[in-house]
Every structure is written in structure tokens, then in C-alpha cells.
Image (cartoon, rainbow, N blue to C red; front, side):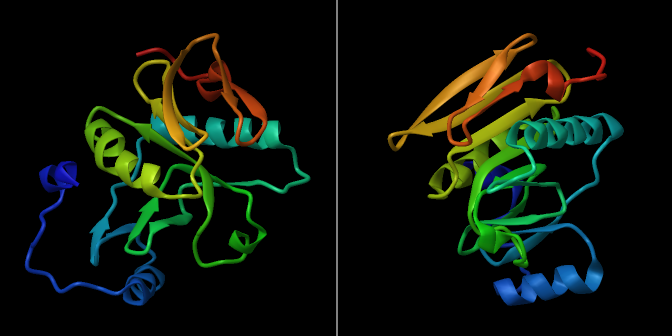
Length: 193
């Protein structure tokens, strides 16, 4: 939680919201907010490079999983509840729970993906990572660097987290989904910066 203080004020004078109020706000405004401990934060839009990497990641995961289920891939508009009072907008999420399909948000995420830039890396790989690791249903957390071809994966094996980097030419084994993801597919037609 210490990382949160660097990015988000603990008490900024705003009244706290309930989850129901947060969901109403999202529905009424149509804007992308995250919900952290009763406070809402408007999220910025993404740059084209970021968006292309997200699309490639969604396509790659969907191709690996196939169309027969039971796991489905969701894009950046899906809200993901990782704790009772924490709701994030991840870049990509995989859920294998049928109940998530028609819900107002994803309650049982299995894999989350964040595409980060220099300005979001510390927040994504710090504060968000801590929350993701505490969510019992999450088995893999994937961080995709938008500036260089590097994907890091934290996977839970027998209740313990392991961290692995993957580079160009590498293949990411996602044992929780029983699939493998080629790094080069994530960066398909993305020039090296």
C-alpha cells in the first residue's frame, strides 16, 4: 500500500463512494474510472502504440484459447473487481467463470494483462501488482512493455508467485490456461523504439 501514496492521495477531501455509487457514475458518464478504497480516479486514454499492443494481446490469447470456452478474453472496457473495494480497468483480462460473462464486471479474473509505458510502469508494477497478487482467482499477471519487446509474467504455482521475463522469440507458458503465447505475436507489426 505504500506505493499508493506516491500516486494517489490518501485523503483528498472528497467523500467516499460505495461500489454501487461508483457503478452508477460509470453508467451515467460513460467515462473510464477505477475505484480504490471508496475513491474514484478517471483514467487517461491510451496512445495508438499501446492500443495496438492490446489488440495483438487479445487476438493472441483468443487464438490460443479457441472459441469453445470455457475461458473468455475481455478488453480494456471491462471493469475487474480484485477486492471488495478495488476495481481496476485492466488492458486485457481472461476469466473462465461463466457467471462473469453477463455480469456488470469481472469478479473472477484468472489472468490480467497491463501494457505499460514509462509514465505508468511504477504504478502498474507496484500498487496494481500488489492488489492483483492478493486476488485469490488471479493465477497470472502479465506486464507488456510498450517501448521495448519485453513481457514479464508473474504466475502462481502451488500458492507461490514466480516472476519470469520473456523477450523476442520467446514463448510464454500460461499453465493456468494450458496455453503458450509467443512474445512476437504480442508485438506483431509493432516497431522497435
